[in-house]
Each structure stands twice: as structure tokens, then as C-alpha cells.
Length: 337
Image 1: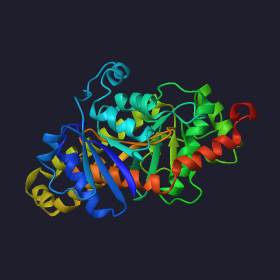
Image 2 (image 1 turned 180 degrees about the horizontal axis):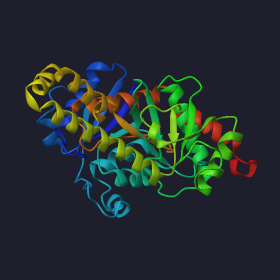
Image 3 (image 1 turned 180 degrees about the vertical axis):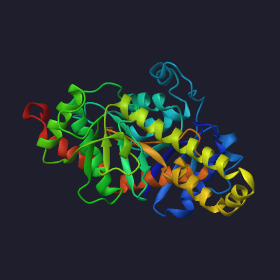
């Protein structure tokens, strides 16, 4: 059985949506067990089945607006987030799913789960939809505002293995987000990263990709520093929401427009669903010793179910073990000893 820890108290709609999502996961995924970390009395209000689900009482939560996430984790070791993360390090569980505060989860994962020995910088990497109905990985979407190009190489390893093992993409292409497609474009960071990607046999490097292609990218993995990729991700979210609003406004004008809106309701709902974070699940934090999935703070039951499903699949495919093997094989002899 794959054992999944769920931070039941983190997120905008905790614990109701986390529990509903967990129960759906138990119904749909036969090889998992779930441990809910949180306020037992609050959890029991919504938990209507106990098959392969247990509760561990926690004390307190980490606020979404926490300004000092490291201090918050260290001073709240019995919070639902801290206990669920610690359970992976202690081997009580194989993975953690949380929709709690992102920076607190990243900080807590570093402290309580630990980073892979050779992995220099963790990264957070959501899987996003494309216009061609495929998916692509965007990294780093906010874990490292500044980074060295050699660390981006390790992140590209992780993303490539994730794309193969979890998304089922054969020989995934890695694209570098840049202001132009020509070689030599962009900052010194971009040029150094491109050179390292091109020289590395473990990376199928496509080349530079402009952000205007982000919703129909020629690569399966789009990579940049955390500052740039986070702006790209938030621009996608804002544009999708804004386009949906403008489309509704135009369709609401005049009799013909309103008739068109009535006829287009199903199409608009499909568009909204296609861009909804709930359909994707969560973003994996790359570079840790254990599997940690960050679900959207606003996740409803289906989003949390998809995040749990994602966590189980990553464990099942031993993604971390496969990344570790590549990084260990490339480490200098003195670092392995």
C-alpha cells in the first residue's frame, strides 16, 4: 500500500474539501492508505467513511499569510503541516499533500523532509494545460527567485524523469523561457544555462522559447528562474480569467449576443474546467528526499483528489529514486564518499 499524509487543516476550505477529496481518493485508488493530520473533532464532521483512512490529532495551523515561514515551522512542530511532513521523514508515510501556505510548505519540507544529498536547489513545478490538449511542466514557479545555471540542470533532470514516468511523455523536450529564440539571447544566466543543457546527454534540449508560445509550447518542459517562471504562471492564470470575463461580456451584448451566450454555455463551462487548477491537482516540490505535493490553496474536493492521485503515481513510479540515480552517477567521487 502507498501511504499518503494529508495536511487536513491547510488551505482556504479546510478541512471539508480535504476530507471529501481524501474519501474520493480512497474510493477511486485501491492501493493507497491516507492519514489525515488535523483537528480530530473538525475532521469527523465530514468524514463519513474510515476504510483505509485514519486521523492523527494536530495542534494549530500555519497561517496562509505567514511572513516568517521558517520560524513558523520550527515553533509549530505539532501543526498539521509539520506533523504530516515529519511523517515522511520518519517513513510513516510515502508522500504528503498540502494546500497550506506555499513558502511555509517549502521551508517545512527542507527542514522536516530534507533535500536530496546532491540536489542543490529545490523547485516547485506545476503541470499546466496547453492549447493542443497536452500538458507541460513549468519550473521553477517561485521556489528560487535567483539561481545558478548548474542548479537548473538538476531541475531539468527531475522534470524530464517526471514527464516520462508520470505524464507518459517519451524523451521529453526541455525549453528555456527567453525573450527570443536565437542563441545568445537573454541574460548571462540564460546563455550559461542553454550551454549546459545543450552539452548534457540526459537533457533533450529544444532551445529558447518565447513566452508568447507558453500555452502551445514546442517543448514539454519550460524552465527559467523562479522570478520569471512565476510571472509567466500568474500571467497565464490572469489572462485565462480575463479572457473568460471579456468573452462573457461580448456575448451578453444585444439579442444575438445573448442567444449566442445561451448556446455557448456548455463550451464556456468546458473552457473554465480546462483551465481550472482543480483538474491538474498540485505542483510537486522537486529535489526532496520524499514526495511533497502542493495543492492550490483554493482547492476543492476534486482538486485535492487529483493531488492525492498525483502523489500516489509519483511514489508508484519511484521518480525520486530515478532522479537520485542520475545525480549520484554524475557527482564527483569525493562527494559520493
